[in-house]
Amino acid sequence: MARKGSAAKARARIVWRIAAVLLLLALLAGGWGWWHVRHWTPDRGLYPMQGVEIGASDGEVNWKSLKAIGVNFAYIDASASVSAFARDPRFVANFVAAKAAGLQVGAVHRYDPCQPAEMQSANFVTTVPRDAQLLPPVIDLDIVADGCPANVSDAKVESELMTFINQIETHAGKPVILKVSKQFESRYRIAAKLDRNLWLSRDRFLPDYGGRPWSLWTANRSLSNDIAQGGLRWVVVQP
Image 1: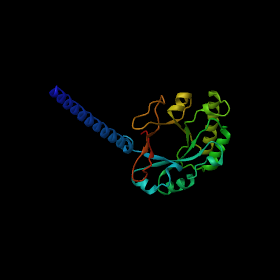
Image 2: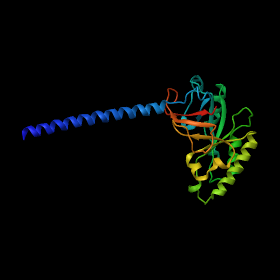
Image 3: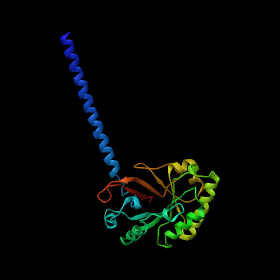
């Protein structure tokens, strides 16, 4: 009996050690995978033009350092919704500094389907200067109308969005780019309805939810580096 008990304990120790080794290997693999994703950017050979999206949440940015690590362009968060308080507080500083660093610059508006298109466009045009050298303006489409105080039908969302697009394009003098989230596209299928260039997002893997080719891709929404430990939104352009 003693021998059987000792053998059982020995087997249990072996099993425990194997389990501990497997757990350690899993933790190491998970840690490497997390590190890899956080530091990954697409191959420059495939996507020569690479840049960032920057807003107040990113804090103070060293634009010369961004230029030095290969950032070619910057889309800067400019406005959202309708009120003056919905303007990105660092837009002007980021805008001026990015241009001074020699980057191509564009502006992003975070669209709110709960608010009238005309009021949102007024907010954008008073925030973003009219400048033919700017990149095409971007409309960030992520918020759906489910949480609006008053009911907003899908048809109303589409018609108001089209009004907003027309007004922004009149101001900018060029077509907008639609930055469409997977959530927004699943709800409204806007990519098939509006003939504008698409900007899609998916960490590490090519996005396919737009149903047609994209022009810009947020390939890493939290890129870690010495410039921004909090994470950069890293964007590439389709060649």
